[in-house]
Image 1 (cartoon, one colour):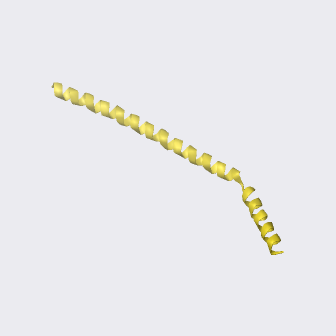
Image 2: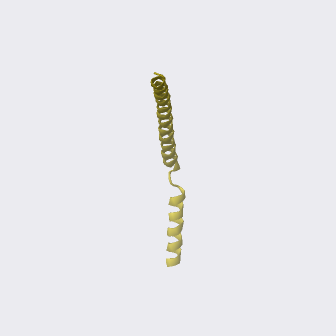
Image 3: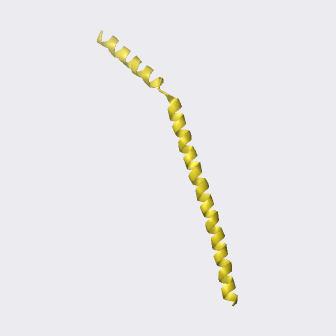
Length: 67
């Protein structure tokens, strides 16, 4: 009888674990990916601005050197 109860408990546990809600996990993963992509886009924009400003500074320095 004890063995039968243990088998039933194990089967119940396996059933509960295998029937978990994976949609919530998938949605959380998608949200995390979207946040990462947004941060990457923002980092690219900042990098482009820095490069533009650096080129402006370089041209200004060249003008000052030529004076």
